[in-house]
Image (cartoon, rainbow, N blue to C red):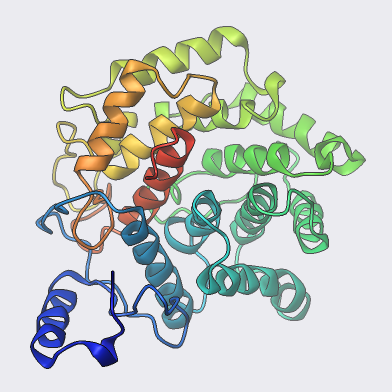
Length: 355
């Protein structure tokens, strides 16, 4: 049983402080939820952080809560690899957390306050916000919230005639490097949106243009094909049955001997720092993303390959609660680790392996 900090002997408190500062763990007790006022920013994402002695979903959500709140407070924006990914993953464990409410509120304020006043920062902000709010609605209340409908409707006003959106191209794959990602992400959000949103006139017209974009612009990587597969789990006619099976088979072939998958094997991205991609190592993003997408595509949780992947996730969590993933761009911040941790949580939840 965990005691409050006030009751800890000074020696134990000192030990706890040392461990927390060394590993980026929060000092907030189990009885004191993580909030904007008390969170402790996680330490940097590094490949040499020790593995956890035992798997802990509580530690994983603690990391996600702290990372999302820190990004929100210090950066003042939403981003694909951190707080957007957070809103997708947190409800898979529990949405009843102050951190979840804060990040959801921040996303909603983009729609209700920033966009009417100043406009979106980028078209991508509208697509990502609409998609993630839709996924969050589906995973929490099961009802399409008015703010989500507003965001989805605004998304169509920014869609180009070719069916795509002008995306952020920071050379930070797989999320912020090409227009194709935005199209597939939008497809996921529209398909997942509750209350039959996909059947509204605006959505029908927009999705027809979106499908045309996908026909005219083949997926540049297996990761992007897997994004279409994810979207097709909500909108079956987004992908042919033959293409679905081909994508599933391609993902299966990339499983490593240790049971995990590596993000770098899902594409042929060139690094910005000139070094080689690591295609030999398994990581949190590759393993979590592939398992989650395969589950969405109908692969059963007891599938032998998925179970090996689950075992990899449960034995490769770091002490801080995260799953490390190396950046595809440069060996600096490795923020893709945040999204990797979110997908690891989604994958474990989809396989009933959170305990």
